[in-house]
Image (tube, rainbow over all chains, first blue to last red; front, side, top):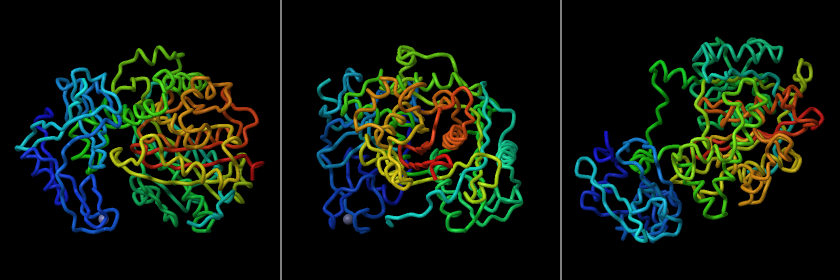
Length: 136
Length: 385
Ligand SMILES: [Zn+2]
């Protein structure tokens, strides 16, 4: 299997998140009681245990918090996907989001670099949110 | 949480056994291997199965007890990854201190290296949020630790050379362990020249994949004094998990060890400066580096210089992982039991060529999953009681 064939198995808590990726929209869970985002998406808010969670769309802007360039594939990636970069991105929404980051020179990606949202198609019409390091 | 805990010195480790080989492979597997190390640990203690009223096993203490035909009063199977064995010692000591049980056997065996050769299935990660929010990006175990390493380097100026020096020092210790998988001397340049798999980590920043097994017998210190080995009391212990997948780690540069280390040392009535041996789980070089800071041996951000200066090597100020560690001795998947067997061996004065002189306090610090679940056990000699 290659990464493009990856098919997520959404749960009740994540179905809305994955459905929005069909339209290339990044939704983050939001607790109106606590006025904060909840990520990863889950059945109840870890702040107040409310099960009435809402969704807000993210603009997908942020900066690199940590990055690792992978020279060997870890499933579902394959040798053709290598090298690839995995990074934590601190979104402006206040969420630390894990994703791949693309750049002309992966080794030049640094902590603090600004990144913007892009979409990578996967199986069943879903997309994966990924990021591009603008500076490189 | 209660500020005073009463398990200090109530229980002791009286039996140890382990199986490993320089080839990385063992002829036995599964229950056969478990039975062998349990027998060896009981023999070491001078006890028999008839004395055992408690068991701990990461998969199922229920199945283990049935296999051994014993009806334990203490039964423990909490899964926290590689730190489970330190957690089991903490719980065993608490159970013994409160009179729930008296003599507890903790066992582990895994043969990933032989299993792979024979085409037997490996360990399968249980389903969870990682499947949707980490796995699709090709992030595995090593990448998770690489992200922590990258953040530490960016925040504190730690270098790849400094991380590599942990692998070098650990290999020097392995040279004194005839059971170690790798004993040839290693240089920082060797580590940096090994394949870069997940930057900033190289292949030689990673633990081994070997077969291995270990067993430990814990009993009351009162009973331990009548047994054949020098008494190695449990002086303090503490456990904590702050997350499971790395995505949920509150701060990539601070592990739960920052809390468990202080709690366990306070509980033992000692400070980091009193510790003569650190057995700190080294799944990767970055793992061991974080323990040095979080357990209070050096201030946050200074472990890189500390290891590069040779402090953890043979002859250094803080011997670390004297058996050769998960990096050079053995690492069957959940290595935590080997931290305990080596600490006990050293405290008994039975570590042969790698014996630390005048050792009184040793720390076994386990780390499970993705820097997620940590347990610190402070052990001592009878003089430390
Ligand atoms: Zn809430």
